Each structure stands twice: as C-alpha cells, then as structure tokens.
Image 1 (cartoon, rainbow, N blue to C red):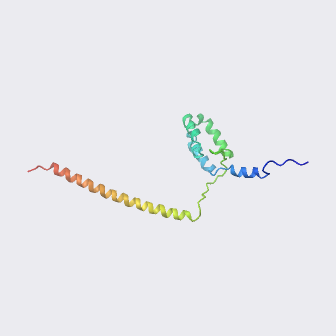
Image 2: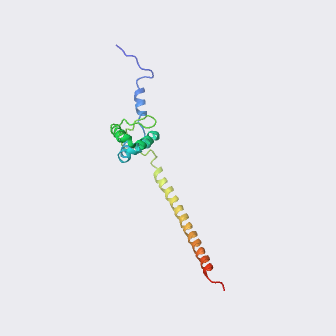
Image 3: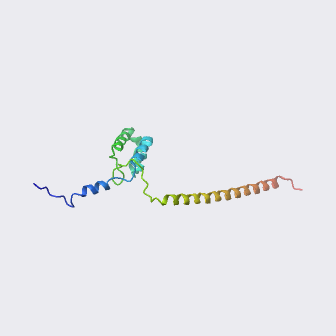
Length: 144
C-alpha cells in the first residue's frame, strides 16, 4: 500500500522546521525572564513589545504569566514576533571573522575623536569661566 505524497514533496517539513527557529538566543531570553520577568523584558527581547507592556501593567500576570513564560522558555517552545521558536541557548555572532577587529579599530578611532572634542570643550569652558571671573572682579572693584 502506498501513501500519497504531500504537495511539494517530503522535504517541506524539514525546511519549515529549520526556518521556524529564531535567531534570538533562548539563553538571553531566559536570563531576561529570570531577572526582569514580571516586567516582560524577555518579551521585548523576542520582539513582542505589546505583550511586554501588558506584562509590565499586570506585573507578569501577578506572577502566573511570568512562571508560564519561564516554563515555555525552558522547554524551547517560546516564540518570537515572527512565530519562530527560541531554541538556541548560545548567542551567535553572524559577522564575518575579519569584521570584528576592523570594527574595534573604528570604535577606537571614534573614541579618540570624542576624547579630543571633550578636551576642547573643557578648554573652552575653562576659558569662559576665567572670563566671567574677570568680569565679576571688574564689577566689584570701586571705580575711582
């Protein structure tokens, strides 16, 4: 006896299962749920701000909704805004291997520029304070 093949073949289930996994980390969501669960931090992380706001207003459904979410997160059935399951525990960096050092160099250069700007602003502030102090001294001295 042969069974009919579903439309699209047998591989549709495998492809849709791979697509149903979120790129967000279940570990990060679990930590957020443990630390700020009644405030819905894990729901904001998963891209579900509406239910996050409702959790804030109800303090996690007085703890019941929060505990439910903890159990669902632990079992890997919690879903993000697109309906994909948060299954991966680790946080994956999808950037190319060569991009990270270059990004660090860019950030270092940016911080150096910011430090120079802050130093320049500090000099200008010091100059303005000295000018104001001189003006106050002139106003206090008797004219004569």
